[in-house]
Image (cartoon, rainbow, N blue to C red; front, side, top):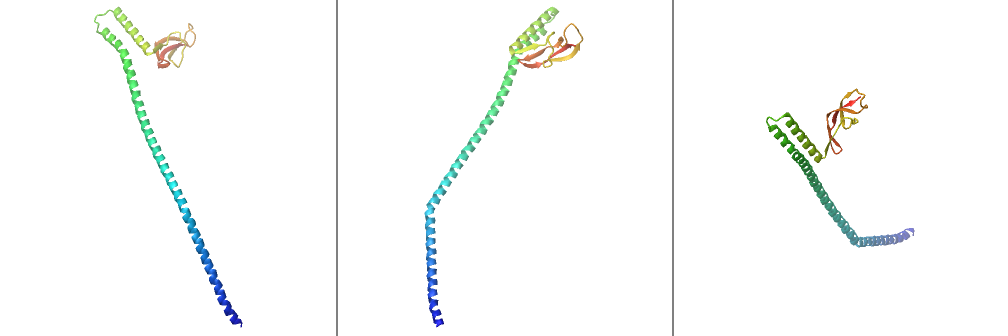
Length: 200
């Protein structure tokens, strides 16, 4: 009796098992279908996101190319500016030298004329040298060059070069008593310091 009951329960259990497997299979199929539908629904969104990312990449590439072009142009402009500045400096130096030499040429001409005179008296030679000296000072004045260093001035180590001291009570200590060589300035720039002796 017990065996027959057991035999009757087995088909029922098997039936339940088959039903359960079928239900599970249907559930799995439904989930798979739902996932596939979701993925299918997400494809346009993903494609749109991909296209947007590609457009952004292209935009960045364009900006990078533009910045690279700007950098190259700036480098070329700087190089041209540097070369132009160098040429201008050289031209300024050349022009300044030519201008100075042009101003000094009349003095050279007068020195040559004085040397060409034969049998000139000492007085005539002195007058000629004085005229050339005056002419040279006029040229210096036009160029903005001034002389300094005179007896009685106070010694200044920035513009005077002391080559000796003299013990004297006639002038106060630190005053220039003898000028061996005048100094010259161009504006405020000392071209050559004055060579002097100073009272001790």
